[in-house]
Length: 91
Image (tube, rainbow, N blue to C red; front, side, top):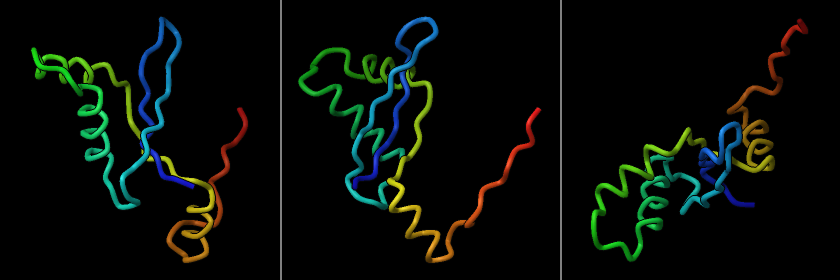
């Protein structure tokens, strides 16, 4: 299973769209992956490249690294992440 950068973009008044951009390596940071995403979106563009890059970056609501559950299981077994989650009290 792969690791991804989740990019959330607006897709209407009350809707969002999600783009799962594969990471080049497990250690790649979200900033580096986002730079690769923007470069790919600008591929073949000659004019107003800086303006188009700013438009792409400003349209992104948020980004987050996503990892498969097998990665989390391995981290938990290695003792690198907590084994339990905090429970929220029902309101």
